[in-house]
Amino acid sequence: MKASTLFLRSLPRRAALLAVATLAAAALLPACGEDLPSARTKLEKGDSPVVRAAAATRLGEIGGEEAKRLLSLRGLRDPAAPVRIAALRALARFDDPRLVDLLSDRLYDADPDVRRAAAEALAAVGGTKAKRYLLVAYARLAGPARPAVAKALTALGVDPKVAVEEGAQRLMKQQLEALKSPNLAERIGAAEALGRSGREEALGALLPLLAEPSVPLAAAAARALGRLGDDRAVGPLLKLLEEPYPELQAAAAWALGRLGGEEVTDSLAAA
Image 1 (spheres, rainbow, N blue to C red):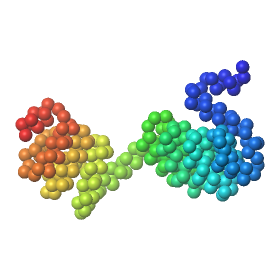
Image 2: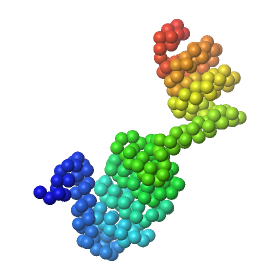
Image 3: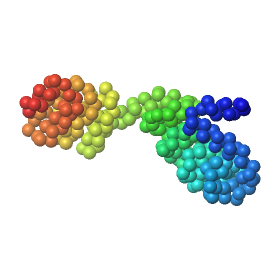
Image 4: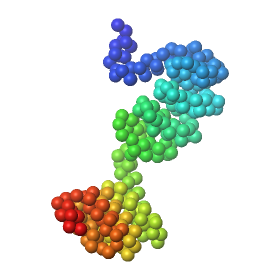
């Protein structure tokens, strides 16, 4: 039995199918011809994903603006994942920073293998913008694509966990500054963002807002404390139930309902 056959049998079914497509594409490269028109025709009209993937690979080798355009408009939008993967790898060969925005879109492709290929392509192109896109994806993505994004960031000299934490700290600082704004809408938005942050230090910034003369701001702070999930906010929130403003009472009750606990249950039942 050939070594390649043994290798393919050792792979999960999906990975094996992709490997077969890649091997077949490599074998078909000569059939694509060396000219761009032939590769274009196969990418646009090939009835098999293997043929279209081979054409995408060939366009990456041919190079030039027309090949880049075809890969961007047709290859990355192909319904077959192996073709999109081949297009990503082909575009990475151009080493063109102008492609970063386009490549980054595929970080959120429906297919996890395409997402991995997009991370690899961004690492190959590199640059500050590619790092930013990868950092955002690392914070947002879960599942099998996330390790590929982490690997891409590491290849670009970025520790993803450290970078995400630094970004969260910068955002926290911006939100704390926004709480001092003379614009009420900005202060309310900052309070809501602090509640979603899940960071322990947000508690100290939100609790004083419960005493704000602006009822909408105090209510926003109450809801934010409910989202934050720190039970040290229970006592101050219970006091809001005694306020004469229905909006404040409703916000406090909602937040307390999220926090839960025996004290909360008894107080809400008595309210």
